[in-house]
Length: 437
Ligand code: DOR
Image 1: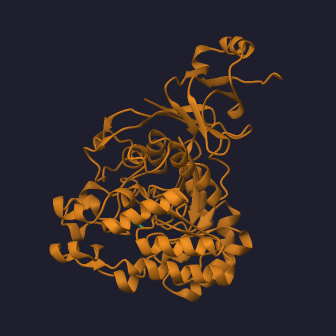
Image 2: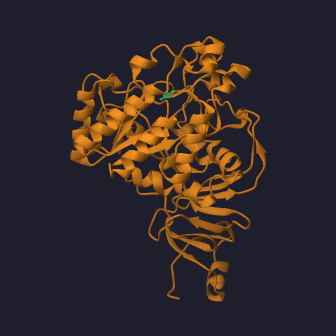
Image 3: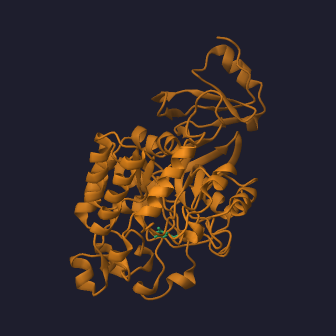
């Protein structure tokens, strides 16, 4: 073996890198913050490792060692609502949840629709515990009326555009946004919700909303939005990424679009893969209010099926912090959103992997290389030369969700008290241990 230079190792764990094979016990060699090699330890290598300082040898026996997780849908509330989340606190929560790269959404106050706003977030993220990729707005103030200066946003590093939280209701504006996006070959991320059909609603339109007397959004509000943008992608050739998909019809529409060869990708959140609108009537827990709303069991099952057959490319948390004051009110008065960075991995293990619906390899693929490829991010892999962003997972660790222990500044999760079955052991960012339990 040619000698590989290294200054840190992770040994004893089962390495899962979706790009290069699965489930092998191997030692990861790191040099100067980058992956230097993945090796089965020979006696010579063992001797070399023994010369390292003890704190540079990470023992991962009995653990899974995977590329640092990537979450392409996160709301950091800075600027504007630093009481709910800052860039630094959101990155701390990300590290605790095993995420080394996150993409932040532009619906802050002010919005991320200018070069200054992109640079502000990038600056705040400089020494944080995760890499932050900024997604800029499609339209000024995410109002859907006038395009943001998309070229300017891309010039300073925006990796995609979205008006997340709002749907770009005007198809002519969306067409032009897609045409611009092609000039830079960035994806347009789409919050798919026809607002004429959803205005005033607080949950899914269903038997449950009728029973509870709450106004509902029909699932067709999402389907119409998605079908329009698939048609616009066909017209313009733009890459589109449908965010937080929640309905059976959306899964079918995307499956068909992919078969046609259109440049369409999509994500699902843990909550749409696990919960249904039936939960709402049980506790009226305002943390169950989310956009798009929790749907029926038929929709939830279709989203799981889409994840299993590859229609859904990746899992994203849609981490959406809200303060206790804002959520401590009647169900219909609460703002939509729930946090997810610190529960996503454990939820996916307990509700999908443990139930035999997803393998570890597929789950890791959908939380690393797949999301990275959707946005052309330089992460999500253990390839030699890549940044040493690594997550070490205790794959059978039983734990109970206790929001008061979260690193996020917000506590709005409906999964309080849930018993989960895998947990992050250590998170490594560029060869630096940023989180350990
Ligand atoms: O539930 C949601 N909350 N959905 C969104 O699209 C926006 C998010 C937020 O910013 O709170």
